[in-house]
Length: 392
Image 1 (cartoon, helix red, strand yellow):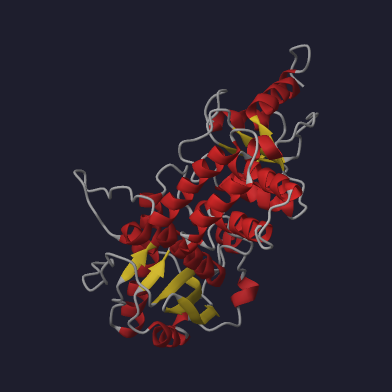
Image 2 (cartoon, rainbow, N blue to C red):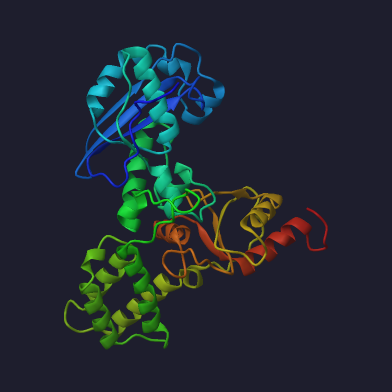
């Protein structure tokens, strides 16, 4: 279909919009049928209402589609068809800009075709595809599926691949990209090959990267003094705009407590020093040195660059030893393996979002272990080859 009245891609960030997500019977626009349609209304960046309906597609739902979205024929058999839902959906979204994830070539086209077929008029709302922003801002990630970006930003993806849940996840990713990269994340700026240039970190993210070497300089001499505590507190007071960002809040609140009575006690200095070590070099501070006997059936995530080889090489070794590769760190993860080379892509100096999430989960009492490459890879090799060089 020639969609000559399709809306335009918005060149920038919007504060008022509707997030839309569809679940369908397939991945091809010409043959896919909508089986769930959801929308979330946002005003001044805040969610104000939502819309969600299951839809009977008038045909069996393929098993491969149900395997992804967990929507079955039984669930939709008594639901209205799209013709009975489309008007209430259009009343909800009105003429809003539509924000979605990978919506430019699929959801927007599917809605356009449906409106033309059912009402004889196009779906012509303008739109923002968050996938484009994610690719521009985070080019180093292995892929840019919504699940991967959610993992990068430590978002809980339980219940994903249902339309309303994915709307909320899209909102969180949209907000996170804007927080880290600002308006540049959503501006189309084409270079020589027609591809968008990578967006640069926002002032907030750069300031957080400023904080890391500042903390390192305080503890590099093996101690922390009351004068250094006061100087750090003064710097953080001048950057209160960073409140709410990790690890700013943890440091700020710890300093606030220590200086509350006007005097920093020796035990408070020790506690602050431990905190700064934890935040500047968590792999060294939190790293596990337990002997690893087996990884069979264990969930393992990797981060950083490895002396052993590429991440795919490491994952292949994990699989050969009977381990289960996790794309990101989650509650079920048993080990996070950190490459010896680290990574220039880590947002906060010596660590990135996966290590940050592992720390959070450990603090919640979950058994995830942070392991360095130098301990983990030799253990894996022993598991695969055996002490005598034989395969297990």
